[in-house]
Length: 215
Image (cartoon, rainbow, N blue to C red; front, side):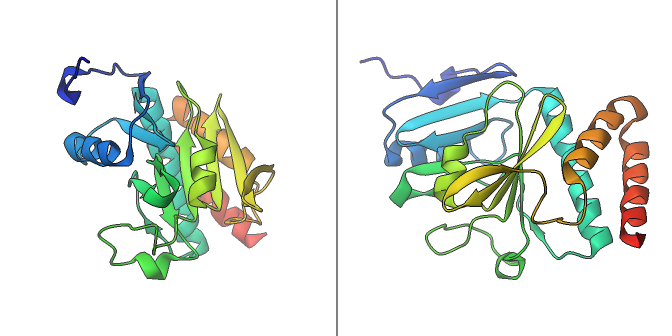
């Protein structure tokens, strides 16, 4: 058998590499070797490990959506705790994932001073964000971990999936922001940022949110 070190493996932007028959101890060791300060993202499910390297286009969309969500939290005065691309994993289920962005909302108070996440005792994030450009979000992993709501941005459009009876169903509204047309708004302002620029788009979005609050 030929054994390679992770440092010998290079994943170009926009590509991914799959490893099969990876046990939990190996998965933990790989996470340790990769470290926390890296551009790559991982997903682990039932012995299959995926390492993907996002494109700059992916990273920009992720950041824009994160900014838009933060504006919503601020203007609607919703308490939250951001956990970015934290690795969420649970050994008993042999599942692990790193969202592009994630937030604790209903459970924000429990997570204010958390330095490490243990899903055997801690709740999963209330909202996860994924930008799908070169690979598809592994919804089955999020289902197994019990993330209540996930937003997926693909082909210039936002899709919302909500957990019902342990399975995701596509929804036309966000339980987190039930009184706003989130799908249309996030899709529109993400696209607008490509022509108007980030700063102007965020100002326009904040103005739009304030107008919605006054309705």
